[in-house]
Image (tube, rainbow over all chains, first blue to last red; front, side, top):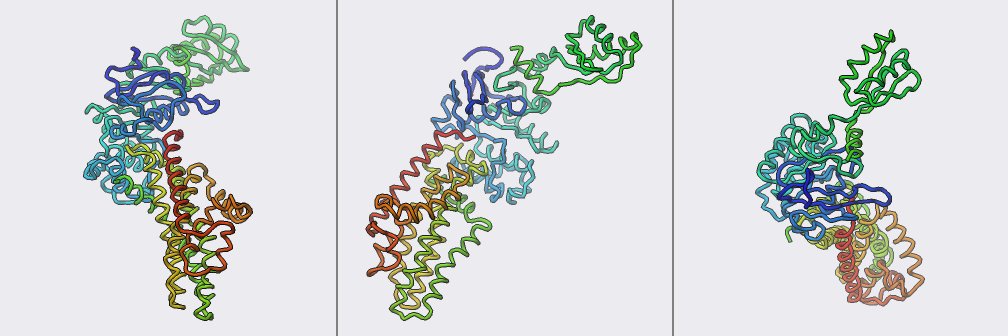
Length: 311
Length: 248
């Protein structure tokens, strides 16, 4: 496989030039990367193509182009791979009529593993107290934990989790993150997708960031942070005498561009803090009152879009 | 086979849970109740004729298609609707085994409900006239027709979220009207498969329900063979679709 931060040695999942489109919509575009033992975070805004990629890894979707191998085989051709691969899907794929214990026994029966593992899996997700209640009465967080337990009952070598922390409270979240980290430290390949950077930051040493179906960044969390450090920010400034302030701003090194709309300035800067220090000084020297200073777009999506454009 | 029986257990609970069983129970009461009242003042020699009129028609032409449609379509359709299909498919099991277990479950549930209904109606003949010869034929007819119906409706349920509506149109417009007009279509009509098995096994000449057959020759062997071929084709096709189609 290719070298680079998107690839790892000893990969358990290898993805090569994979694309997936649904009609005219491209969900994943020419993506190559690999995953190995340890915890990898798959980060990206909603609609970035994370779920499509994960479902292709599990063999639920066929790549439109490219190739993909999990544990050395194409998961769409060899169902035996599911003895070692498990998915925790984002959607509520649970049987409401079953109790959590019955749900896990069902998973064990389908995979051909001993039912004795059920209690252990229930304990791992801290669901013992509710294990004999129908899942239909569970909260979102409890359903998430039941889904994780159903994956764990098969003791997979590769565990793929699609937004597993959705709906969990802070205590459940901390518990699940600790569980994922422990599984990773035992040599399992654990892939966790999320659209929340801070969430991924807490658990994953390695991160792949996706946007618009493409790989935006890859590497350790520090590298992703560094890549994000020089992103230009767009700031809306409300000030009296905007034309005079705009001219003065353009002379500043940290200012990339300035656009005037009505009484507002839209300033592009690579250093938000420096701009925050400069603006009051310029306003004071011009005798103009500064009434507003607000970043216009600092969503994760805009950050990732920038990273994709820069690649 | 552990996976097969696990799918069967859970599917039966899905199919027969909640209000569905109550509604089907009420529907299933119709043939024995109609039989009971329609034979109340008849001479013993006329009871079996009454059985082969309204009650048997209600079993084969209304109760069986409706129950098989809802349960057959629900066997895979419910999994698709509830997004639990991936839970079944991400297992080291052949996809045709998943399809087979789903069909087996739908058939068991349909035959159980409609067989009880038809069996009770036939039992009225036994109680009123001492003639129990219709019991086994009607149970065989129900089982054979349920297999054919559940097979087709399972595939329909996998393809469409409006399977019940499409199925009703099929049963009451296509089967009742269009296929009756053509001998070739009548030979592959699901409606006529069960009736053909029943008429083929039932004692003596039967009047009433045999009109439904039209040009189709009655016979249990042919009906069973047709139903088994339909089931085998549907299992193979569904297994192939579960393997090939994207699960979004």
